Length: 211
Image 1 (tube, helix red, strand yellow):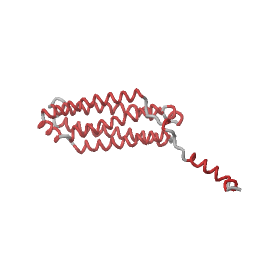
Image 2 (cartoon, rainbow, N blue to C red; image 1 turned 45 degrees about the vertical axis):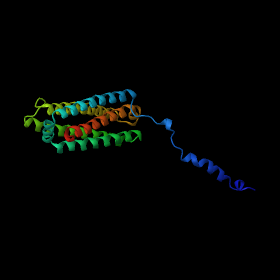
Image 3 (tube, rainbow, N blue to C red; image 1 turned 60 degrees about the horizontal axis):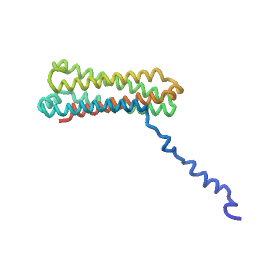
Image 4 (cartoon, one colour; image 1 turned 90 degrees about the vertical axis):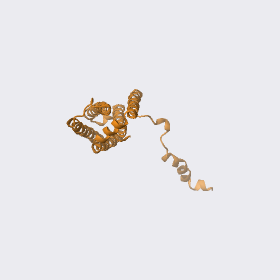
C-alpha cells in the first residue's frame, strides 16, 4: 500500500491548503467614490493650482511686500490649523473604515470627531482674521493680503461645504443598512474633505512659509 493510501487526509489537506490563504482578486478592487466626483475634485484642484501659480508670479514681482506680509502672519495659528485638519483627515478615514466593517458606532464617532475638527479650524481662522482686522489689515491693504484673504476665504467656503456634507452624513446615515446603501456617498464626502485638507496644507506652505 502506498503512503497516499495510508494517509488519505494528506492529499486533501495539501489541496485545500492554498484556499485558506486565497486573496481577493484584483478585479474586485474599486476606486472609492463616483467618477463624477473625481472629475469635480480634479477640476477644483486644477483651479487652485492656477491660483497658486498666480500667487508665486506676483510674489516674484513684489518680494519685499510678500516677505513683510508673511512675517506679519500668525504662524502658530496657521500651524495649529494644519494639525487640526490633518487630524480630521485621520478621523474621516477611520469613519470610512468603520462603515466598511459595519461598525456603526465607530463610524458615527469618527464623523463627529471630523466635524469637531472642522469647527475648530473655523474658530482658529476667525481668531486669526480678528487679529488682522484689529491691526487694520484687510483684503485691500496690499497685494499680499489680497491673496491671503481671497485664498483663505475661498478655502473656508470649501470647509463650510464639507461640514454641511459631514453633518448630513451624521444625521442621515445612522443605521447599518443605511450606511451600506449609501457607502458611495459616504466615501465621496470623505474624499471631498480630504481635498479640503490637502488644499490647506498647500495654502499653509505657500502663504505662510514659501519665500
